[in-house]
Length: 412
Image (cartoon, rainbow, N blue to C red; front, side, top):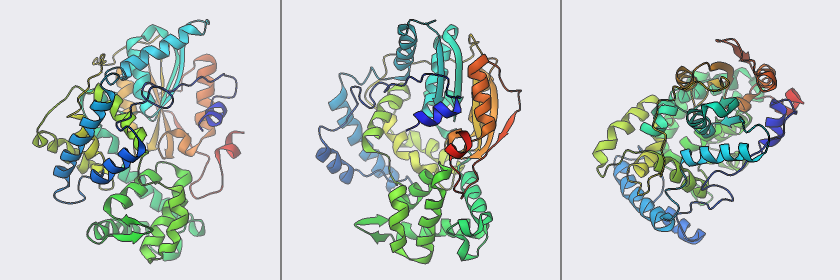
């Protein structure tokens, strides 16, 4: 899906090579259940709710993740220690060497791929000919903590979604309500609290606290989905449940369960912290929750699963990323990213010597969420001749929210 867009961003002059990392896609995937029926049953018995769904939820999640961890171990104990980030970093270098060219790596990594890229750079600094990291996780927290920083700009992004929606006038499905962005934000949180106690039935599902928050959070990661998020909220504000059909065909309230198992296999195995006591992780959950009213407790399940994970990656990079690569790295961060805030890009740059942060002045997760000719040009120049933007550079975007403009209109 990303291939044509990445080809356009990089100028169309490069052959792109991609592969499924260990435990994902068409590799020997980490699957915690023997079949889909077993997975559905386990999900029904051990649902992944947001941590503050109720005052008993964190305890229920603790027991649910114990069941998950046991199932994952039972079905993956022969491969579970072989899927970590460091081994995948070695796979990338092996591919670069197998091409029979110069053996050097030219890498473009998004989101979780930024931790992978930074790890490759730290382990093989002399192999880095070009590297762009876009939508950067906190590379230190990945190994040593539980992604607390990731929610730093989530609420700002949601506020921006509402303000640009109102500014878009009739192009925004919420405009007919004749309310300010601040009013709508307050109403959204009141709605979330209301369905916490009085969920709404809809086509065999429950529109509840976790469902509403997940739909909004996952929806605001891509500016192209913002009209659907607005339609979803409008349907709930007005009580017109028939309006939910269209946006919920576009939006999702959950990750694919197999992807979640793959992700846990990689991330939980990479993290060394283990505990058998829920009380040990409550301060971490409280810290993440305090960062974002909208989504801070979404990862309660992840945190509780990882600290009890029964498989450890055979190799972990636990260094400080203070390396000087063969060629300096270009780091791109969105001004308003609900998943990977720009502070994480700057944190990574502080460790990766000679790297430069290009601020992409847009919304969503990673720069393709709202494309920019300026960012695309900086990307092309960097891959062509290695020239980095000046420190402090900012690129404006060319796809307005709530418009019909697409990345193809801008880049092709």
